[in-house]
Image (cartoon, helix red, strand yellow):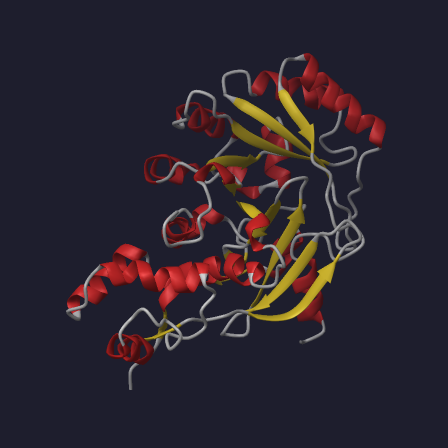
Length: 348
């Protein structure tokens, strides 16, 4: 019996090789991808510009897998959190965020996460496995399939559940199809951001293999605080992280985004702001301040608005490009991993 694999796990180049091995001309790969990623095809039967014999061959070897959606939570602000169930019964989360002229999708790259960041609810469930390229791509394809205007989904951020750089090969393969402007998901590299906790051993490869945006989850300006918040800092301390960021290849106007979650009494003082200012002086940096998103699993609190504004003002006064990125969906299971955790807790 032939075990059927999800065809979305293949890059177009890999599909071309598979087709050529079967004596099928390479241009068919583009047609197939166009049906899947632009035409939302669920079966090969509807691919009417491809011969029946080729369609039957594809059907005998591959499936076009959808993710099952047990739950969608919609916020008053328009944000939607999708809970996806994978073929093996595991769950992941994906968040659709409406912006002024477009939508941003925050997607997962792993089931759970091994980084154990103390502010992240996903870490509570531990790491289970990496997502396949097809499962990463399915989040975009399947969310678009629910939208009245799928063309509005223009930005993708790989900062949902999991550490993208810990699933490097599968992420790079998925990016190939995301950025395919002819037959893939047609998402510009300038509109894709990879957010990492700081797995600097992959920075050189990432800079070589792709031109998407890089974001660093920093969250502290000294090693003691960052190691407490993010255990990865014990392996890759702040000095090494900043050095790796200095070496990272950037186009003339590009900057690395540094994400800084402000937690009351932990990393929100004026001294923290001043250290951050000095720390990033040698890097082409912009800063996203994110007031902590309180959830029942954590005793930490969000700083007062005045403290957040003062922190931001110090960065502006020092010449940095910095914004406050307020969490959306606060009236639903907004914390990363919260909807999945609720589902697991209810044994559903």
